[in-house]
Amino acid sequence: MRDGVVLRAALGASVVLGLLAVALVAAWQWGWRGGVAWDGGARHFNWHPLLMILGPVVLNGLAMVLYRIPWTLGSSKMLLKCIHAGLQTFSFLLVVVALVAVFDFHNFKNIPNMYSLHSWVGLTAVLLFCMQWALGLAIFLYPGSPASLRAFSKPIHAYLGLVIYIAFQATALMGITEKLIFSLKPGNNTKAYSELPTEGVFVNTLGMLLLALGGCVVYIVVRPEWQRPPELAASELAGDVTVWPGGDNNSEQGTGKRLPFRIEEGSQRFTL
Image (cartoon, rainbow, N blue to C red):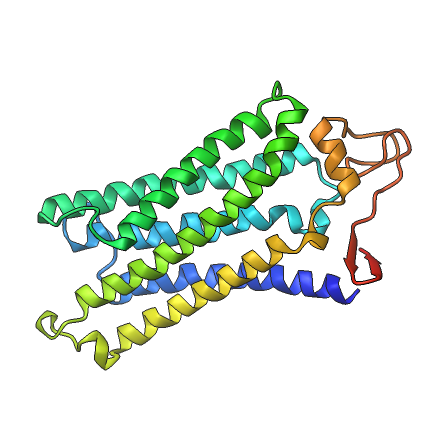
């Protein structure tokens, strides 16, 4: 069961790190940057880092590892799809508000838009995320979607989701670094970033937490032995998984026999 313990530890770490990341970015905004507002001033911008970390980094990461949680194997796949899509939809809405906030702030202050690598990578990630979200709804939630299309699209959807998540992580790290460089200057009544003032140390710590969170999420997602059992996934793609008498959605058709979640490592097979 050693690998099962590793999975649970990685899942637990990803949840704890995600909560800490949200807490730290909120503490940064209210502790040093004056909180948030919608008035065109500096606090208007503060919505951007807060929502971009909460949505596409933390909630998006949670949506990605949802299917790896062992105790969800007895749940309806449609229920899991709806939760996954709900988390992604909420993330999408947060991204929209975050982008409006930063473009509004730039326009109020006559700051040029879309000139930095942070903005280029970020906009690319947002456009891919929107495409992934729309196609995911159409292919995996629409009842009339052919099983062959779902089977063909599933590995592409998973791979592209991982690429988008990594791009959002990179965007967040570049963005908080840019903000520190622009804000921590002697002329702004603070020490320069190069002198490592308290705010700089605090936000660098936030960046390290984001890096650790990204490592946990990617590690969980790429481990093939932690995916849903192939026989169960095949039935779900074909649309044959229903609740059978004496069993649940994780059962063999008509038998009520539960399909075990096996974690393989080398020649060993572990059943959770």
